[in-house]
Image 1: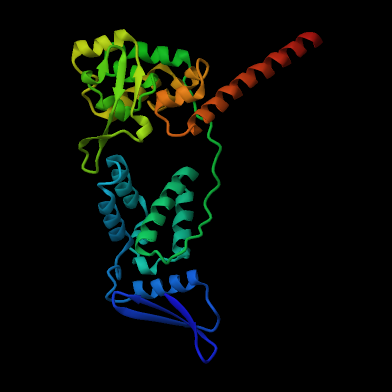
Image 2: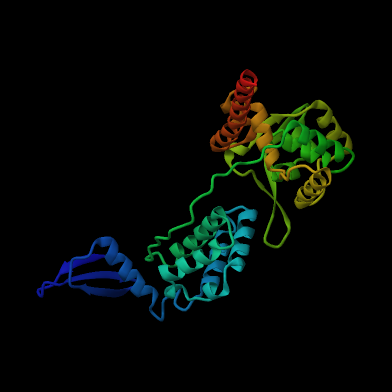
Length: 330
């Protein structure tokens, strides 16, 4: 692309694309970024443009298809569901007709019902589609403010009550393994062959694809491929029964939700058991070791868990101090 000044004093941006020359004339000297955006916008609106007349839904389907061999099956499935959850008035818009106004309207609509985190995820999806099929469109959306997340970390008593209630069920071993830092997908992919003595070699994960089929894939990140230690009696039980877990991954979550309700426990997911693992291990060893055992790529989760645990200790200290003061006064 070139920008040249004409004898009239005006400026002209010129670009060659697919053997065709495109030109835009300005009364002022445009920046290279602005000129490129305007030229790409012109090209996208051409009747013979491959994206001309394509709706957002069609673009989203193409995007998911382009990424299905790169992204995890879970992510591909979630992307497909995300498009269906957006309003039809937006997904039926042609890609070359979408402006910041329509994006703002869609985000405002989502913000009335969804959490800030969910809205940001939807916006990320919309931005990914548009940056692929409308690279010239610059998106500047004001997103809802993030809420401070205070994750509930199960207590020792919570864990003991839960395990006692599911002791003789198929869910006992999966929940135990989650307490030792394993993700649900890693647990469902585990076989007795992955266990040597009390050492578990975590190499794979099980995911559910867009067709609701079970798919064996690599772990979430390269850091997730790791070795952990579990109680020998649990390792022996797995070897004795010849498997870890045969059911559907969602069944573990549904079981936990049902039992927690029956026992009157606070609601926490199987993923929160990883937070329990982190909170207990941080009191026993250094954060780098905990990070390696849990397969976290960064220490952001550990910092959140540590801050939560520290806050609880501070609350106990404040209460103890106030009680001492009350004892002095009364």
